[in-house]
Length: 195
Figure 1 (cartoon, rainbow, N blue to C red):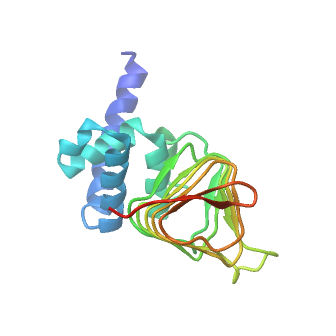
Figure 2 (spheres, rainbow, N blue to C red):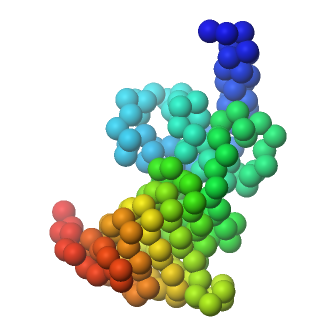
């Protein structure tokens, strides 16, 4: 390992320990993000103590690091570039997002919703926003919603719990719980049985 890489690695670990103590220990929402990210990605790190899980995600998952810095409301944190490459993604501070948030490649994404429930997963190219530039006309998204790449969700609509939205979909109408939708405009493809 080159000397610079070793110094950077040690410095990152020191910063992670400080971030853990300051922001993770007493924050159940960030802890839910950690647990959900490891579970969905099938990581063996799930068996580790919470601190080790956090270290693992911060070192090896820049997508998680992006979400972490958004959660702590430090988008311009001095050392953020040691963990996250330049990301062209904006999550509005006014958007309330419950724990378990996961992003895969958060590039070219804009998220502006009234609220988003637990275990929300999204991919690149997502647009969630208002209609006619009116911030009173924002979507409400339920729990356990998974969104594919290049999806648009616009307007004063409600998306239920346990919904999968296929890539490239345009969602402009209410969506019930327990279904898979896709298309432009998005339509129900099938219903998901609650088990």
